[in-house]
Image (cartoon, rainbow, N blue to C red; front, side, top):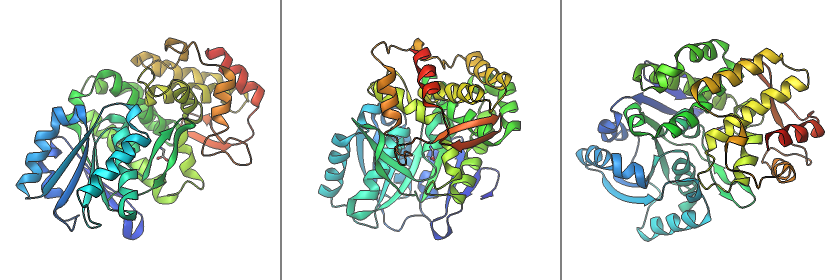
Length: 370
Ligand code: GLY
């Protein structure tokens, strides 16, 4: 991993790529793309809301560099991350005669990045791909590292591919139009980096997060850069999640189960599910005797102090049952021989992977959330 003031490199040999972070970057997107892509044709897959707010700015920047542009919009929301939009997008690109040297750009949050990335990995067995993430969650996590895919009724992200982008362009200014609920949900993934690997970053977040989430771009720049730096280090070391990359799933095994049960309909956002899952991972770590109680309390208090609810009972999920949640957890991608792998904490700043989790204890813990 290499780093300058606003650029981090994900080191993957000849597939290495830059993450560039800057306020106002959209206006420079054409210049930044020029050296990275061979063909002049770009297929921009955009979230409808992001297109309405920022599409013309990106269009103008790409026009300035004389790129030919094909824009396709996708309805906002997790429910777009499924077979029907995947099929539609593949067919639209093929009908527009996309060629292998052309480039697909994902312009939106995590849903668009995962969906467009899987489309880019699939059409013609793979075309160039660039991420322009516009939500905090996508900027600090999902746009980096090459995980792409869609949800199916069986669960979240169960169909997809590892497919690295050629670049990630992060414009901080777009966060100014991001709804506060989305900003907070994305923050759960920022905290994750402190919890799994960097105590000093967690302490910094405790002091600065409220001001940062109030819109301070310098603080956001620091938090996004630090998050991407940790992510780049981990992905460079373990691209296909054979080991350490698994730690990035803190809170996700629990979180994905709640999300799947809520049907991806917007009642529970991915980041909110991660916050719930992170609290449960911390609580399980305490009940197994792996972490001190005060550490878990500190994590929960940090979320609550910012208004990020990590208690599932605050959401409209009265239909959810322990059996259904347990069933989702055993269908997770990380299941081996029928056993789920969990990310647990030994303290703030230190996490580990284990299969040695007491199922009855997890089941009791889940029942307490309903
Ligand atoms: N979001 C977890 C990972 O990229 O590995």
